[in-house]
Length: 57
Image (cartoon, rainbow, N blue to C red):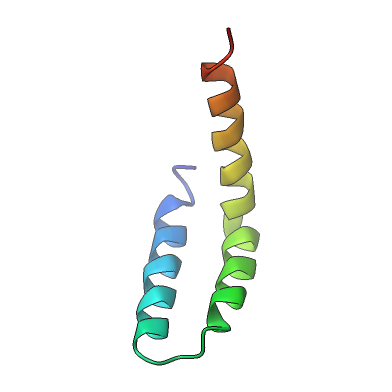
């Protein structure tokens, strides 16, 4: 997560700004694909696993 967080955050901010400035909303779909392929999917799995472990009785 530490390795990819800044790259993913920058991609997110850039995409949001571009959409706000008038790019088509479909750019968000590309953002999701890029975000997942750049490590977002793995980061989501890691966070979900951590959450499951921390909430375990």
